[in-house]
Length: 197
Image 1 (tube, rainbow, N blue to C red):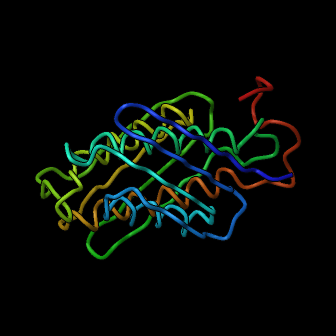
Image 2 (cartoon, helix red, strand yellow):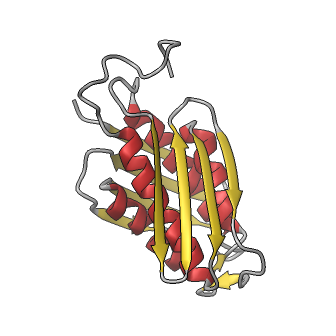
């Protein structure tokens, strides 16, 4: 049974299409108009082994905020749709990913309850590549979590380079989501004593 989610979202600010296959091979076809964000979505697909298509047209004449926020909301909704009833998944996972001097630690619970804990080094450069506001990383994750309905803890205990600090978060997120959503042959039904997630 395929685990594919597809979401289209349109507002006065953005038009977004996201499709994700949780059992893919890491193929990404991404275009948001925000170069560094595209690079991060490529990392999510590659290291999560998700096949990911993203098409976003946003009000970039204002700034990149709405474009990244609405893309993350649609991505979370597509992820949730692809998971279906969550039968047989591992549910919990964590990953640590270094990128040179930076380290990201990510833990996820595909719980059905949205919650984000996020910490990264203070004093980061405010922008990456001219259109990625580094304060948006947390908001992107908040938006994804709100729609995916997962509990997500992201911690970057150290790092100097803003590009590295953000990128290792997306790579670690990809690995944790991959492991949490994989089917475990020993699990029957939904991995919860409640009987539902």
